Image (cartoon, rainbow, N blue to C red; front, side, top):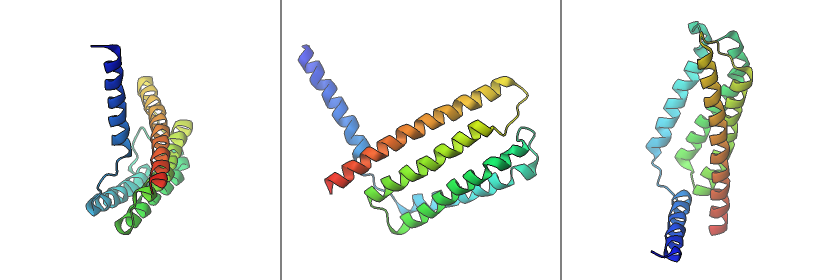
Length: 155
């Protein structure tokens, strides 16, 4: 095999990868309904964690509750809107906003860290997970920005 054919194969793989990222996916309304129900359940859980007296959650959890509530309520509202209106460009735009809110949730959880564990390893692991989460949300947002640009240019 020559180097040129290997390069062509790599270019084809890159082209297929980018095509998968930018292709419009079919979305059913049931996905939005499930997301709404799931987020309502999460909203209830998050707002009642302190009253459950879990040993590893400190009272400083109250300091991050506001961003949790904003993020979860925004997700519920967005999914309600998606039931009626969800063109690709709009979904990308809204996903960027939701990713920013999710990033803020991770950031405040990391900086305030309202948890106390009996073993330091759990603290380190959770902080690493939060850092990876923030990095993943940045990458996801950048991909959504590219999708949005692609969709706007395409239309």
